[in-house]
Image 1: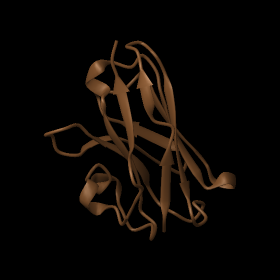
Image 2: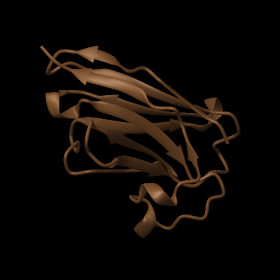
Image 3: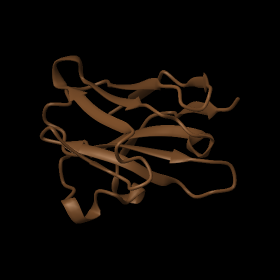
Length: 125
C-alpha cells in the first residue's frame, strides 16, 4: 500500500493545521492507521492511531489533536490545534495494511508495514 501525506507547513504557536494521508488502496479493510512524528535528533514518536472509528492519542497531544478516517476517500486526517513549538517535526502516516496488529502493539512504529513520505510541520513565531 502506498500512502501520501500532505498538509504540512509553518504556523505560529496557537495555530492549526490539518494533515491528510491518502492510501492507494481501500482503507476500509485495513486495521490500524496511525500518525507518528520525528523531530531532528530524536526517535520517531507515536502521535495517535485510529481503528474502527476509535482514536487513541499520545498524552502530549491529547485534547489538541484529532484523528479521523474517511474510508470512502481512503484518507486519514490529523487535525492539529493549539500548536506548540515542540510539535515541530516531520509527520508520518502509517497503516497496518494486512489488519494484523493488536491494540497493545499499535503504538510501536516497527509494527506498521506501510508508510507515507512524511510532511514537515514547523511551529514558530
